[in-house]
View 1: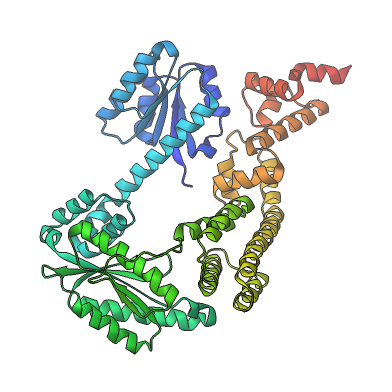
View 2 (view 1 turned 90 degrees about the vertical axis):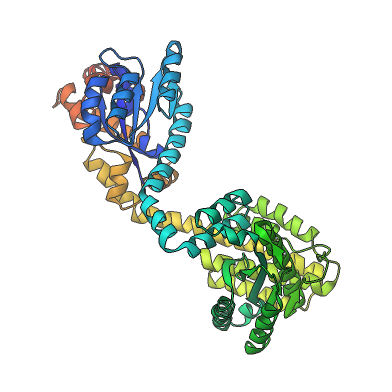
Amino acid sequence: MELLTLYLVDDEPIILKGLLETYDWERMGFEVIGWARDGEEALLEIPVKEPDVVLTDVRMKKMDGLALIEKVKELDMKTNFVVISAYRDFEYAQKACQNGALSYLVKPIDEDELERTMSEIYEMCTEKKFKEKNYSLWEKVLLEDKDNFLNQMVGKYLDDAMEVQELEEFFISLSREKELRHSFAVITAGIDIAQRVVNQKEFDMKQYVLDTSLYKKIKEKYQVWTKKTQEGATCYIVDLGENGRIEHLKIILTDLRTELKGDMISTLSNSEKGLEGIKEAYVQSLHLFEVAAEAGAGLLSMEGKAPLKTKNQYSLDVETQILGALRKNDVEQMKRAYEKFVYILPEEENAVRVYLRRLAVRVEFSMEDSYGLSEEMKQSFRNFYDAVDTVMPPKGVNILYQLFLHIIELRSSMEESTTEQYFQDYIPVALEYIRVNLQDENLSIGSVSEHVYLNPVYFGRIFKNVMKMSFKRYVQNMRMEKAKEMILEDKESIANICVQVGIPNPSYFSQVFKQYTGILPSEYKRSLET
C-alpha cells in the first residue's frame, strides 16, 4: 500500500503531541511529514511540503482552520482537509466541510472513529490521485483506441457494473449513436474443458487457435467485441448491423468446428436489437453454453426457439463460493457452499459425474493458476478423476468433499511453514534494526519495513502475528527496557536517557515510563538506591 502524506495542525501542544505519537498512522495508510502549532505556521509549510491530507483543528488563535482552508484553496493546491472540532464548535466543522473539508472529528478523538474516518479518507484520496494520474492516458485511449475502450465498457455492462443509460452515453460520446439501433448476437466458444485434464498443453494450444481464428473470421465482416467467461471460454458480441441476420455466423462456427476436428463447443444466441438486446443475447448464449458443455454438443443455437430451461442448472455462483472458501482455508464456509452444490445435482447418474468432474477441474486449475499445487495435491486430484467414473454418485460426492477438506488441511500447514520461514528470514533483521535505532525518535513501521523491503501494512500484520504484539508496543517496550538499564547503570541523567531512547521530551518520557513500570523515572532511580 502506497502511503499518503499527512500534515498535522493544532495549537494545543498536548493534543498535537498526542496526534504525533499516539496513533499508528502507517497502519491507516499515512506518513506524517510535518506539523504546525497554528494556521499561519501551517500556511508557510503546506505549499512547500504539499501534503495529500491536512488534519487541522478548527478553532486556533492566530489563524483558524476555516481561514487556513480558504488560503490553501486560493493557492490552487490539491490538498485535502480533515478538521477537528470540540463539540461546541460543531457549526465550524460543518462550515469547513461546506468549504471543501472531506470530513471532521470531534474532540476528544475516539481512536476507532479516527481509524474509520482516515481509512475512508485514504480510499477517497487514493482514487482521486489515480484518476488524476491516469486522466491523460484515458483521454489518449478515447481518442486513439475507441474500439478497445468501448470493448471494456460493454464488458462492464454485461457484468452489471454499468447501467444501460451509461453505456448509451459512451456510444454517443464516441459518435457511434447509429449503432444503438443495430441488432446484435453473441457467440460463446471454447474447447471442451475435459481435454484440459488429459493434456494441458494441447488444451491451451487449441484454445489459442480457436480464439485467434474465430475472432479473425468474425472481424472480416462484423464489428465485434470480446469477453472472457469464468470458465475460460470467449464471448463474441457481434454487431449485425440493421438487418440482424445470423446465418453467416452459423457457417463460420460450423466450418471452424470442422477445422478443429470437433473439439470446439460453441453457441449462438438469437439476433436481438439495441443495447438491452446485447445483454439478452449474452444471457442466452451463456445459458446455451452451459447446456452444450454438459451434453458435449458442438453447436447450439436459439434462433426460432424458446429459451431453454433445465432442471438443476450448474451454478457458477456456488462454484465461486467453494473456491473462495478453499482460498481462505475456511472449512465452515466450504461445508455450506458444498451443501448448496449437492442440492443442485441432477438425478441422472452420468450427469452427476459430469458436475463432480467439472467442479474438480475448475478448482484444480483455479488453484494451480493462483496459488500453485503441491505434488500431493495434484496426486489427490488424479485419484479423484480415476475414481469418479467407477464409483456410485453418492460415493463420488463424498470423495470430492473429502478431497476439498484435505486441500484445506494441506494449505493450512503450508501457511504455518511460510510464517515460520518469514520469522527466520525477516524478523531477526527487523529486530536488530530496531535495537540499533532506538534513539531515533522518527523510528517507525515505515522505516523498518523499508529496511527489510516489505510493504508496511503487510510487515505490520506479520510482525504482530509473530511477536504477539503490535510494532508500536514492541518499540515502546524496548525503549523502556533500555531506559531501565541506563537508569540502573546510573551514568546518564534522565534528560540524556530520554534522548538516547528516542523520546527527547522529558515530560512525555516520564508519562510513558510510568505507564510501563507504574512509577516515574525519578522514583524508579530512588528505588534502586535504597
